[in-house]
Image: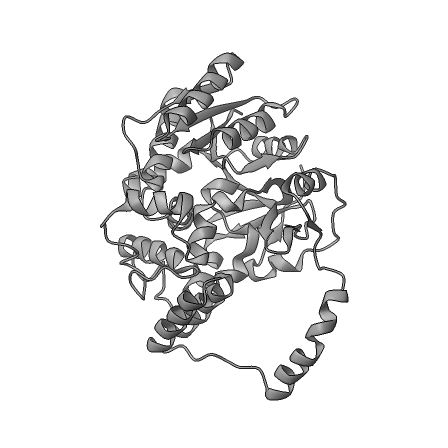
Length: 388
């Protein structure tokens, strides 16, 4: 059993170095790390390349693509490099914005050893910067292993129920994937994840290739530094910073043209685009048409993330133009909400909030007890897998 993590990064040397350290610090686990540096900044390239070279660790391999690549193209190139240049049996994407908790890799290795033919997904905690401070989100977890059928996630997506998929949704960055599975995906779709969004492309190509996967219900890692997240900036409609760099690299290529509302950058429209891209290959019998009402309802969830009032107004207009009808709360609930607003600040926050990201990270590194049940998994109809 040989696990290889692929770490694609661009102009984030310090984050990449922290991610590498968190993986190499996992005791008793033989892993390889392929760092693929797509940076445009010479200083960022120097920092990361020197770190990898000076570390002198045979488990670490540093690579650079021949030219600047789009994010999805880069992920795919890096994955191909890892498959060609290592003898790994299982592969996964390591975000540069994710850190492994101490000792967290051991249970994942154990599951892969017991079920070498299965893809294994796992959970994550979150530290998210908001105006009120750094909010930590720690989902319920049982620590148990479940089997989930890919037909279930396909059915839920077709009904517009992406939000219900939760953390058990298999994306390239929360999975360890057998080499044979990646080879089957590549043979059927030409690439592993080269499309508009690599994580979502992987999800639905995998669902069209395999019948089931395993989910280890445990937050082995946590994500942070969302100020540098392309995905989070996309949700907010913010094209500055790193996402602006992403948009510039994308250029004038067609954008989300397979989505029911083509070209719309809102909520989970990117996932529906990738779903329909796969549907074009496998047909509607395997991937049913997307329900219009559910689709619009799911897109509307994305409105909550938009900060700019003018952009929010425009997105509401677009949704209404395509048939969305906003369900307003009854008048008495709206009145009561306004009356109670001054008192809400006295209520304890639902999740811990910290003044700095460093404080939030230290908190997330602390061990947590498991829950007896995880109702968040219910929509995926999981079947518990007994330990061997």
